[in-house]
Length: 330
Image 1: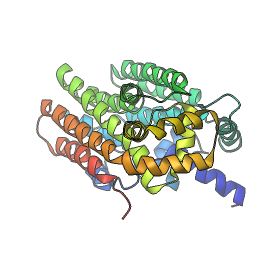
Image 2: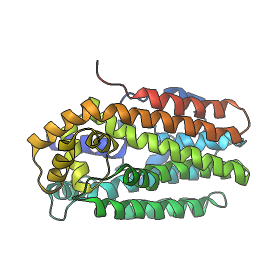
Image 3: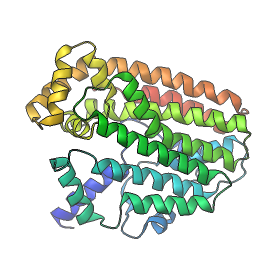
Image 4: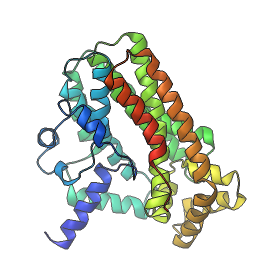
C-alpha cells in the first residue's frame, strides 16, 4: 500500500468510524451479537470500496437499533433498519465534512478527500440508500428517517448562521438535538417500532436517544480536547460554525475565549487555536462533563417506560458508562 493510499485510508477511518476516545462498547456488542450488522453485510450495502473491517470499534448506531428493538420485545431485529441507521450516520458525516467557509482550506481538503478516496460516497447517495432500505423495513421507520433528515437540515442551517459568532448554550442544545440527538433518536425509535413498542414506549425511546445523542455530542469534543489534536479540532469546528460546548462553558469564565473563537472563524491561526485549546481544557471541559452526567440521568430516566430486561439494563448501563468514559489524561 502506497503512502498516499495509507493517508486516504486514515482519513476514511476518521470520517466513517469516529467514536469518542475511551468509550468501551464491546460488552454491548456481545449482548446483541446475533443482531448486529456484520462487516460483510454492511459492505454489500454501501459498496465494495467501503472497507468496514478496517476498524475494531463497534458501531453504536446498529447497536442502539438492536437494543431498542430487543428491549421492546422483538425476537429478532430487522437488519434493514440497522443498515439505514449506519448509512444515515455516514451521510451526516460526509455532509459535515463539506461544511465550512466557501473557498476555505477545510472545504478544499474535504472535496479532495471525497474525490480521491471515495468519489461515489456522497452524502446524497448514502441518504438515498438509507431511504430505500427504510422503505422495506417496518411501518413507520421511513417516516422516522424523514424526520431525522429534516433535523439534519436544520442543524446545517444553524451551523452556517453561527459562523463568525460565539454560540450560546441554547445554540449548542438546538444543534445537538438536530444533529446527533436526531440520529440516535431515530435509531431508538426505529428499534421500538421493530419491537412493536407502544406509542408511549416509542416516545420514551426517542427521549433516551436524544439525551444519549447530546452526551455523544459533548463526548466527541471533550475527547479530542483531552486525547486528540485540539487545535486542529477547534479550527475545524470554528470554520463549520458547529457549537462546541466546552468553548461555550469556557467563554462564560474567561472573556478572552470568545475573542479567540471569533478570530478562528475568520482566520485559521494555529497559535490562536493552541492557546484557545489550552484555556478551554482548563475551564471548559469540567462543566461540559457535568452536562454529560445530567443528560445521562435523563436518558436513564426515560427507560422507565420499558419492561425490565437485560436489554433495557444494557441501555441503562451504556448511558451511565458513557458519562464516565471520557476521562482526562493522567
